[in-house]
Image (cartoon, rainbow, N blue to C red; front, side, top):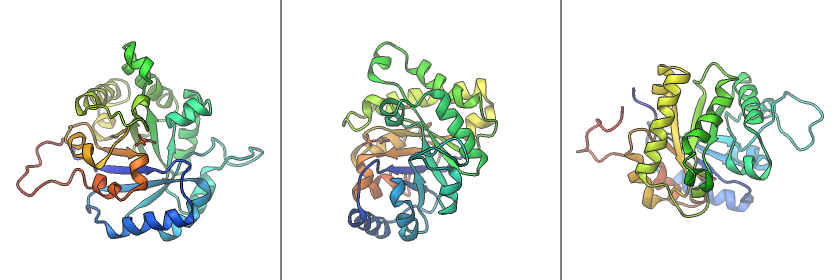
Length: 258
Ligand code: PEP
């Protein structure tokens, strides 16, 4: 099955209106392959600003949302509020939310279930710390994080998984294409065994962790890497090159992707 290549930016807590105008400018100037999907993960206070100015072929994503409709949850935003602004995507379970804000697998699963119920599309981030990798627990962690969500949702069609090894996020240390492919492959197999073969074949798994224009092409060649979630480099014009990382030269065949 052909899976649509999907590249997302995660601006994290960066930017102001002036900086955003610059980003919109280079996104408008750059070409985006017609077959690729692109989203940008924007701080909540600027979601509307970006939604009003973004190019048509790029979607806006929130970086978080809460697990219920409304109420006494100071500081939180709901999927309904995102939909009210026309936002279609939300990034959930980013390692910074897990590590800094103490979000558990359970909470992330609840947020995912609620966001999907409300009609948002979810980028679900999973990934191991360096310590977990070095103690041979990469698969265990990634499977556990995915299972927490699998226990709460049935329909995966609006979910994209972002495999983001924590040790590669913002560190300049990228997983090698082989390291990333190995985890993507294991995760797809786990999904086939524990969710369904159909979901395993169709779900897109992005890689995230210090992706740059320099390393994106090699990563994009891996058969189970269906796109990227990009932090630091999504604030720079090289993001456009990353969006184009899967563009094939005319003489290349299509056989490298399922
Ligand atoms: C991220 O924030 O999801 C990320 C992958 O960051 P970076 O690309 O900066 O490592």
